[in-house]
Image 1 (tube, one colour):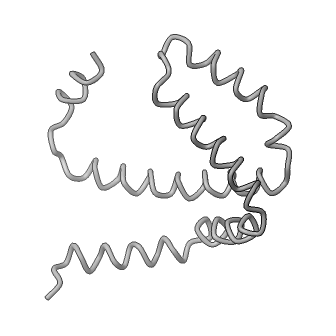
Image 2: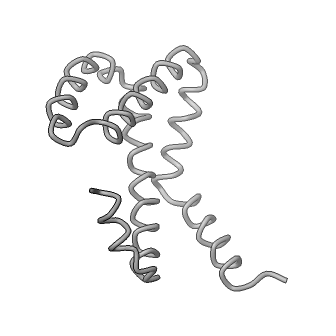
Length: 119
C-alpha cells in the first residue's frame, strides 16, 4: 500500500507533466528530434554551459559566461535552438521552485554543512 508521500508525489508529477511549461518543452523536444545533428550541438552547448556554471572560478565566472554568450550567439539565433533552450529553462525553473519550496518546508538543518562546502 502506498503512503501519502508516494501518492502526492505521483500527483505532483502528473500536475507538472500537465503544465504549460512541460507541454511546451515536450513539443520543442519533439521538433528537435527531427534534427539529430542539431540536438548533438545543443547537448554540447548545454554541457559547456553546465561546466561554466558549476566548475568555473567564482571570480572569473561573469567574464567566462559573457565570452561564452558571444561565442554562441549565432548558434542561439536558430529559432529551434532558442525554442528548445527557452522551454527547457522554463520547466527547469518550475522544478527548481518546487524543490526549493519542499526543501524550505522540511528543515534538515543543512546551513552549517553548506557553509563548510563553500569554504
